[in-house]
Image 1 (tube, rainbow, N blue to C red):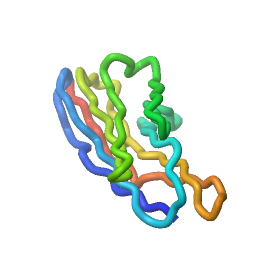
Image 2: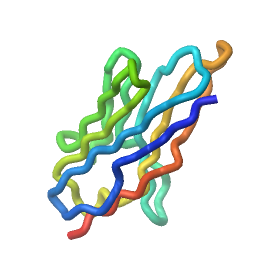
Image 3: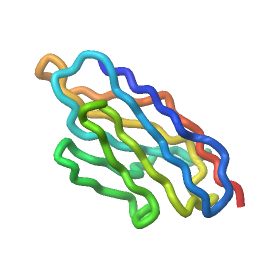
Image 4: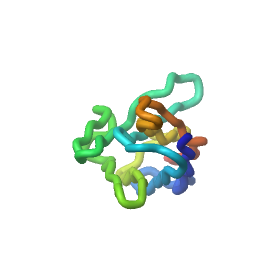
Length: 119
């Protein structure tokens, strides 16, 4: 019931920055946790960062101090500011949203956006 539109991926050199955005639309009662996952070729999808409706955040150890997650509740949008990017950050990044629809917890994934960091 929730559609997610991601933007902001691309190609950047090591040490550079990118900002990902994910806007949620559709029918829902409340959006709870918003987050970003990533999946590199041959690897499992992993959590990068998450933020709940109260603004509490959590990060993967590999991105702490370099990535910052934030959200604009009025726009139902979550952002991921990625600084000091490394080649190992190369992956497809997926937006994840946990929400309530018809009083039932639900979940949606974004379509994914490619982030490529060159050395």
